[in-house]
Every structure is written in C-alpha cells, then in structure tokens.
Length: 142
Image: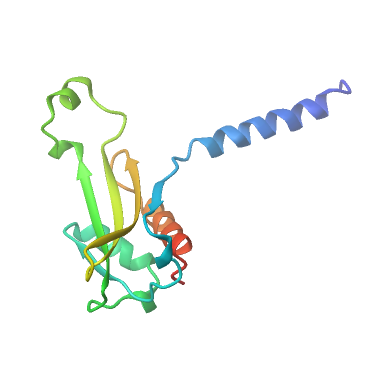
C-alpha cells in the first residue's frame, strides 16, 4: 500500500461527510423582536393542516400548550398544486411546497418569530421535529 493511501482515504472520507451534510436544507428563521426571547411560557396552535398540527403536537414541549395563551404558533403550509401562478406551472420548481411556523403575540397582533422551509413530496416528520427544536432554542422556550 502506498504511503499516501491512508491520508487520501481520510481526505476522501472528510469530503464525502461534508457533501452529505451540505445536502440538508437550512431553515430560514428570523426573530423580529429579541425582547420576547426567554419570555414565552405558553403557546396556542392555529393550523388548518390537521396532519402538520398532529406532527407539531408530537414534538412541541407539552408544558407550552395552552389554547388560552396570548402567544400563538401559526402553522401555514403551501403546496404548489394549490398554486395558480402561470410562471410556476410553466417552468416547474425544485420543491413541492413550503411550511412556515410563525409565533405571534395575539394581544398586540405582532409577529415575533418565523421559521420556514421548502419540501419535496410531503414534509417528513424529521423536518417538523427540527423546525420545532430550532424554534424552541431560538426563543428559549424550554
């Protein structure tokens, strides 16, 4: 075995690992008001997509759930099959839809936080789980 062979394998393994990790799509997220970080102790959930709501309830900290809470987690999903834009239909897209989770102060009618991602096919549960974990970490709600 040539002496450079071991170093080459380490190099190749590292490159493959980086390529695999880079395939994961990042989430777009934004905190609109930093003063809310660490102060959200409950959330109500608003969603017209029953399956997504079920998945969110599965991963969201149960101690946060309170339908009378002044903070609301608004779940919005859009599927391209629902889209009537002629450009999208003509050129296609590299995604089938997107999910957006928004935390809102209902009393002030103010958007506090947003996290969003595109998906292909139907959104996998792991995507929902990662979105919830990022939301909880960003807003320090746990």
